[in-house]
Image (tube, rainbow, N blue to C red):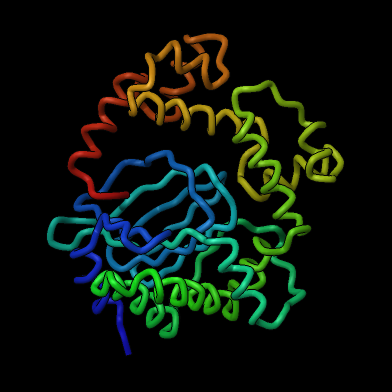
Length: 293
């Protein structure tokens, strides 16, 4: 039987590797401040250390042996709260591949249990989950087999989640007409049109809901209102452009939809803690010394 300790050496050895598609190994040698980020739909396992994630008004504190399941593209605050050079924070994250999830769902019994349109949750990793994570991580030791075998282990991992306590919750992603799927379609629309002036009625129509129902369910899924979600995505996209040196602060502000550079700078600093150019420079320096967050 594999234990978490059996995975830590492999995780340290291969931290930062992208050899297995959709799999990331996060390693950090020291605690961090709260860092704004955007989660992709994914399943994560903490191997060592502790972390805090804030989504909307929900605060999640979790440590080694905890699995975080994210079912939508969420804006959040993340903070590693325990890490050191001798015992770095270590976590595995698998981005959910829709075809793999659909195939895993096809092989599991259906359920009608309502998860209340949740988009994130925590669970303790079972022995079977740890075993499956271990098989997937071991693929990094056998790179010639990754293309043929890693997708099977990824599908098995999703299967383990589907037949466990997170099954009804995770199944929402793969059901085309679930409330979560309809909210995710509007989230995708917002991200693609983040620089435009959007109307709540337009998004509610896309989701097939009344304005009131849409606003309530969107906030339940994401933790924020639709327009707050748009603003946060604008600022994350602006940071990406600035870190990549794709323009100065003014040009990037206009590109992501701001008409006022002063408003852009004010809201950017409120989210990231520093003025745009200073924050981008700090992010580039951090990237040189941090393998991943």
